[in-house]
Length: 133
Image (cartoon, rainbow, N blue to C red):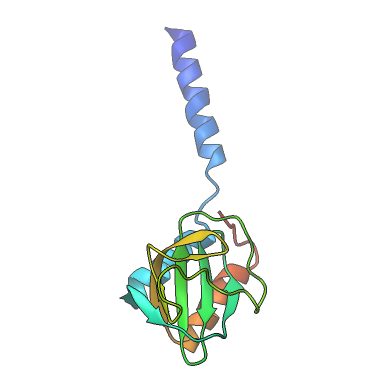
């Protein structure tokens, strides 16, 4: 019985030590919850995109006129390239959440944000000590 209690105690301590605190993804989710940006099912697109990598789950997508926060299921490729174009599946002028992909990463959600929101998200991702998922 004593060994079982010790084993449980060490397991609990190991679990506490492994948790390091909030991540950049958590901060971005808080930003979305607080600012309540409009979720878009689809956006009209043109042939010019700028994509800024935030984490494995979030990027900022800039079109000619608008700025969007794009959420993926976890997706490891990095997008620090302004020449990346989405893989549009159905309509060349529309990018759809849940159907289209960017470099093979399926888009889960698209949020309309403004330029100030985009800058705040970049600062969250680049903050010293920011832990990325």
